[in-house]
Image (cartoon, rainbow, N blue to C red; front, side, top):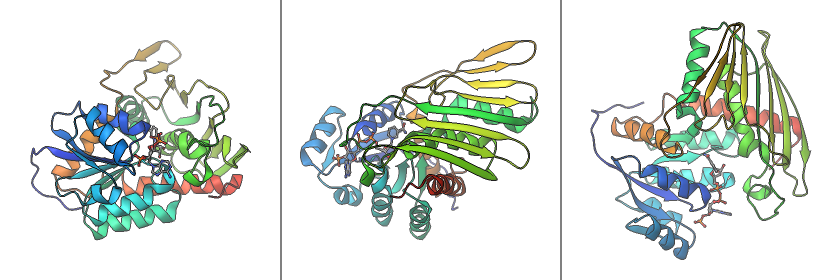
Length: 329
Ligand SMILES: NC(=O)c1ccc[n+]([C@@H]2O[C@H](COP(=O)([O-])OP(=O)(O)OC[C@H]3O[C@@H](n4cnc5c(N)ncnc54)[C@H](OP(=O)(O)O)[C@@H]3O)[C@@H](O)[C@H]2O)c1
């Protein structure tokens, strides 16, 4: 990682791919005083202009290549479907634009390696936009694990599920865009297990494929030689509590409903139950952007919190699960 003197310059952002999450990110970016959304890029001039008008963005590009070449842009947030992440990231890095790329970072580990190599060759910042890593509830739980305040973690139960009506045209069900529950939402319970219990020694998984050949449900179990176990689930077929329960030797720590967002944390010990809430601004995407801005200003090309190694491990885990359930893209 290279380091330069920190400065306070405003980071000039661009957004590539103007779908659902691009809007959320644009809203949250407006919370940060030292960041400015100055350009957007879409495959369609019309969508680009409409988005630019909505958020008062001066430059509306009608192609991703044109956005990547914009000399005024410092950082690009990639908000396209998973299957395009690698190609879009390489394009931006070639033009020395710092890249914050949505999760999953790519479709497989080989693509992730290409992206990391491009970041190193171009000496340009790259980070996976796994926003949950930057939320205070997530950090709070990581601190509990690290401190061993309640002893060692023994068991994790985490789910992420919402009932989605089948729509073959939606990216969630479209195999060529990387559809399926595992890569879209199963990544959150998997990331939580990786962050709290580590890389598993044994992985078991089962699935139900839908009409388009993607996993509409995925049940996963991680076993650890040290004795811990994680039971994880993702599904498009039912709405589930979407909570995470981490059992320690001396307490149960519950990341409450929508654990991957700004949720509260409950701690149950033999004698009391405590609920910890966190101050919320926006949806929470601004926190990953704040971290990214600081990295960029201080000349870093990799995040210490969402490191290349962590992104590699996460993708390797998803690749292994896909291998077990027989999901090939
Ligand atoms: N962090 C989070 O909380 C979160 C939440 C939702 C999604 N995501 C991630 O963000 C990414 C985008 O999700 P989304 O829900 O925003 O998707 P979306 O609404 O379908 O938007 C994706 C955008 O990508 C562009 N695109 C490029 N190639 C495309 C293609 N072949 N088919 C369709 N669109 C294409 C389109 O923008 P243009 O037409 O303007 O080029 C489209 O509007 C996914 O990887 C997802 O995992 C993250």
